[in-house]
Amino acid sequence: MKKSVWRYAFIFVWMPFQLMGQEVITNEEGRKIVVELNGEWHYFQADDTSEAHPNQSVFNLPKNVADENQHRIWESKQCAREFSLQLIKDRVELVDLQVALLNSAGTSKNRLQEQLVQTEQRIKQLEAELEAAEMRTDFLINIANLPEPTYARKLKKWEQDHPPTSTFSGQNVRFQGKTDGYATTALVNGILLLPPDRPCDGRFESIDAETQALRWETAPTKFFSHTDSTVERQFVKRDFVECYGRLTAQQGGLKFLNLKFVVASNKGLQIFGMMPKDELLEVHLLNGEKVRLFNNQSSNGDWVVSQDAFVYNSIYTLGYREEKLLRNNEVDKVLVRWSKVKEQYEIFETDFLIQHFKCLDALLSKEN
Image 1 (cartoon, helix red, strand yellow):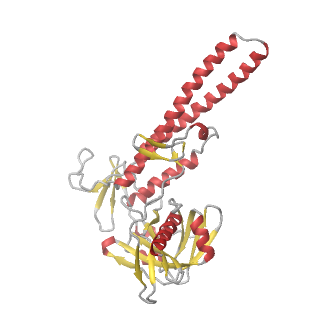
Image 2 (image 1 turned 120 degrees about the vertical axis):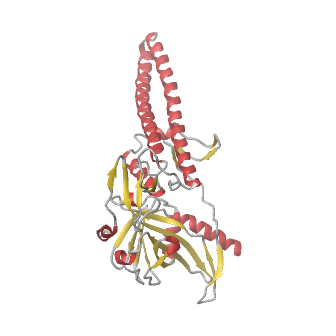
């Protein structure tokens, strides 16, 4: 990022200190919070000790997120089991080859020797793959209870640091159908390659107040969120910046991308400034292309008490080229510009726009 918002945000964050393996911080309301090493937290009390803590403020993941994290752990364990099973088979084959080699001669002996070397190499590779799968399982267990954005960042970093070591891992480890109550598609190294489409909930139609034209909208869902690593301990239950998006189709063929930016600070205007009209939003696709969109309306942001956050709304018109690229390609990053700063955010829901276009198409086909 060429210009980071955290230069300004540091003015408004708090300095933590350590207490017996815990961290005590002060939120914007001036209340002290005790954060455990595992991410759980509660409000500080006068008789607070490391042995006794109230449980009423413990952070809990939403059930669907917790289930997804457990599913990923299950997948990783299944992957390790498959490697282990294949390893047993290859070790048995190795013993058979060694016995056969002792009783062979001439051309047959040379052929068996080649097979023996290949089997030994395969066993060595399998042992490395099994160790990697077990390490991944342990890692997934350790991060299972972290907040969603932190979990996604750590998982992505882990996968970047631990890429598949060979093409072999994708040849024998592959599950389909249902196992132990879980439905899975193509799976390699415990990673679900083809996740199922998410349901299109909450779609609706309305009348545009200005044009009186019919309008169809997908339900808003989280597009991305971010907290800088230097202050992520201060945001245990939420991220500093969250972005929710939806697609809108208007009678006559126009389509729009609607984004809502939620900043967890009442200093949002001082930190970010306003969201100017005609300001650029740059969407970076995984295929390397960039889609540039321009904001149709100015937004100074509003403090929303119910969300305890500063909220900006923006609307971007989608032309034919922009729509074609966004509905057919996954998103890698998004560059957002306010009047004071610009920030580039990583996207973990890379098929976010693809899914919303599917939901919008389904809504339009239902009406026609």
